[in-house]
Amino acid sequence: MFSEPDDPEVVARMRTAHTVASGALGVVPGRPAGSDEGPREAWGWRGRTLGKPVTGPYRLGWLRVVHSPVDRASGKLWTGPEDAERLVPRQVPRPRLHVVRQWTEGKDAYKAELYDHIVGQAVSSAPVLATGPRLTTAWWCDLRTALGCLSAVRTERAAVRQAYLDRAMPKYLAFLGGPVPTVPPAWSTAHGDLH
Image 1 (tube, rainbow, N blue to C red):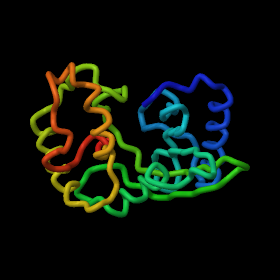
Image 2 (tube, rainbow, N blue to C red; image 1 turned 180 degrees about the vertical axis):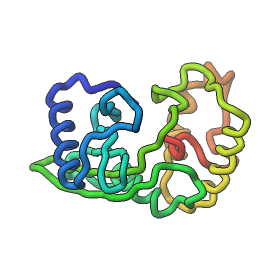
Image 3 (cartoon, helix red, strand yellow; image 1 turned 45 degrees about the vertical axis):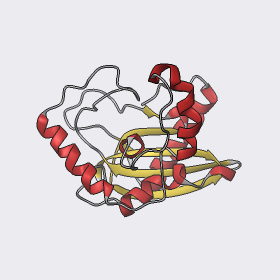
Image 4 (cartoon, helix red, strand yellow; image 1 turned 60 degrees about the vertical axis):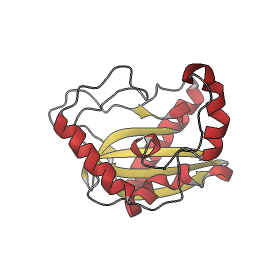
């Protein structure tokens, strides 16, 4: 998760879009049973996404709204959740994606995604781990099993491409102790698959 954007126009636009999406999907702000806190907001990078807990046809859910300029509302950042729901085996634990709705307003495109609400604690409240997580051996075994299932999914999508490695690795030579090969011996599941 990221912080609420500094730009009040982005905040207002995304909160309005979330309200519009809630009405279109027939959901209302919600929270887990027994929780004293009100619905919390989860912001994406630079306010590109806004998610909140909701209650509706699928009981407690999570409504995520994505924004993009109309001319950029395509590609892996736009279709990723739908692609994952279609391609990733059910054995990989994750919130199920139930409904997707898209709309435009002038030069802005929006997508509403209604997911299951997951109860539990995140490994990290920030995009980058600052300390080693305290996780059980069973947790790591479950992750290994899920990654094994995920690695069987055939896709052209990649979080890191060879061109990036060729460009980025030379910048880190001082830290790496000299030249290193930039071509990996194999490609596999990585950060982009876990995000």
